[in-house]
Length: 393
Length: 221
Image (cartoon, rainbow over all chains, first blue to last red):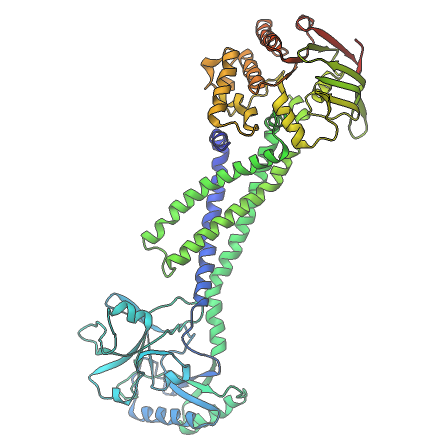
């Protein structure tokens, strides 16, 4: 029967070519949306690497018009030390640290060392406690890193695996000769600065010395007691202002930053989803129309098949099988095209397993859609009255 | 073989009811060649459709091989058509997208247990019998009307049915081609098949063992 249907499909190649183009385009769009969904879902399932609940961000304005790229002055370094001490002295505060880029802020710096892309952040020694990072090897930054001829760094596990064959502790990252040496003192499990929906990426924490030679820190992170009321924000700001007259402090809600980051990453999916759904609806209506017309045009053939012994179920199956053949041919073309992408390294941060999952899911979606579109026309085909159909001229 | 007892059939449109057959009682014996004649609209094709299980009577009883077909499921009726009945139509009704041999194979597609190779062998044999073995890969539009009707006869006989129902099989053909088709039907009759043929042509009807005449849905002879 398959051979018979293939012959019929081949003879109707012009009509089928139009159907195939529709299904092919719909498949590519479906794959894009599904791949993006799978990518984000897979990211969401991965550990974030830090705990952001009950952590407040505090943005610092030194009031002298200096930007984040300016270096500290000696008095400012001293003031910042007092700010950190004062913050930690408060009863509602568990710990506080300085940080160049807040989690979820999406403004972090990236660097490429030895052909490896990595996100880099600069933090003071208490950052581990504030963000509750999970140290998996070595140690976090301590005073023993002071006055060393190299800069202490802590890297995430992905980077450790990618950059070093053996134990990364004590190793230096490949660097430009002009750069200071970065020496690995510890490895953390992960740190996905841009939030749950971001892809895993190599991450480096660089120890921030509070020295006049260093760049300004722009933010603090403060871990407060779980039951701390919102009113404490005012108390915190007042106390910090008291030790840093002339500076201003603005509490930044990590939950808000997280929501922004999340929306930023979901926006393309929502847009693609809406456009894709609309397109799929159009394709579905088009398919139903073409199949309906196809069945109407084939009334005599269907009547003849009924006359020579096909029962209704066989007619139903034939129409759906013909559609399945056209769908299979379209999907084969689509899959043939899409499988080139990983080989050409064009799938970006999408892992091969996510790519494969999206491919299989898209195939299932397309088969479901086309077969769903074929149900009514196939049912119509079973309603063809053989006597009427064969009487018509 | 085929028995109709007081069979009545009418068709309904929105406002009109047309009585196509009115209490027809007819018996056709195994191996008989019966011609059905009558003016247009007298119910000949309706009668043939009922005998071919393409339609069901409103009243009365239809028996095939002494078995009533009333209340049979679609699947059962389809299987009976496939195994016992072959159809030849005035307009041939070949599938234009299939070549000759594939057209002839169509009834066997719906017969479980017949392999592709067996289908092809039986189709070639049937085409041999109608003298078209040299045109098996032609498409219907590459054949003359007479050749297309011979393909249709091959399709009707490929499954070796006991009954051959022909609805004006020579109606669209010139006399020479019509005679060729009649020869084929007679061959089937001589081979033991029951042949029921609707025709307007007395010359063709004369080839039959018996002629049934209908007028306004009633059997008049």
